[in-house]
Length: 435
Image 1: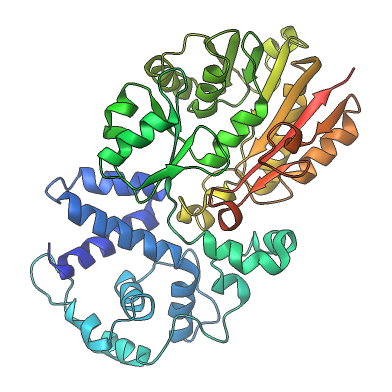
Image 2: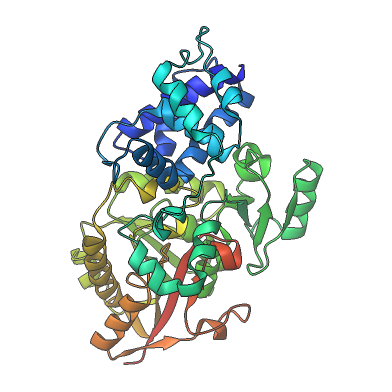
């Protein structure tokens, strides 16, 4: 595909992403499934440009409003993606007005030629830069207004650095399955494939691969020797500190990524219960369990946090992991559209769910057992504040410093961030019942 045809594909893709009530990655997958004639190289270029536009969402839309003499841009109003791509080409990619105009050729599969208004629009951008003195800090940092006060309070002078790190594409982290291989063997195999791979700095089971290689196509993945998992997520599994022979619950197992890690750490000895409210997710997770050669995992579908199974299983488990539903703010570099398209519950609703889920899961923990609370959030309201509230209401629990479990970490709780640790944003606290 020529550059004009790629640009038209991006305009169409962004229009579909904007209109769909689903995450951007689902729209991208659907877009390419219906256009199988687009080659792999062109698919990557189109998707990369679309995601780059989403990463510059706030600033580009600010410019649309500014140039249209509007104080703000109505988030619900239709977006002129032709103009947005002109902005992107000139202010993000630093192309000249003439080079930007040349992409709108009017040829088959290319955008229509610029009309008089669009030519004036392009000429008005000459000499401009993406950042404007009138932009507020939240817009400059691509931070949604609803999260700005909380993130600014949490990170202070580091706010801009943390937000900038969320705009960079994430590397690909994998976790080796110690039941099938070693990190050294996997590194050697990846290097033979021509991949730039190195050990993760904190997780002893992790490997970081630069770029976005097709890891799921490797035999290592197909035979269960590796799993795709961010290092921060690996650290949460390690902080559970599950031992062979123990009884462990993954209370919000989802797709089973952490369940896999826990069962492998237990060397297939003992019992792991993977719980979730969505049966289809657990069914898919079972395929991953089998591929990894794990047979100490049972699944259980819960109605909600008041499920009768919780009552009947009270005080029976050595470890209970609560990977709580959250805002997902720690994953914004992977899912930049999630900042702007709130598809799930509100933050207030999430916080109430987190509190209720944590209290319910605590009932499963035996005396001397541990409750591990984790999120993929950067917000103190979902992290430290939830733990503080829980401890105030449950005096039989106390905090176990994460540094005492994993010496590579520091402090009482873990908060990983993209800027500081090159991982997604993850929080984890370990609590022990002393009753």
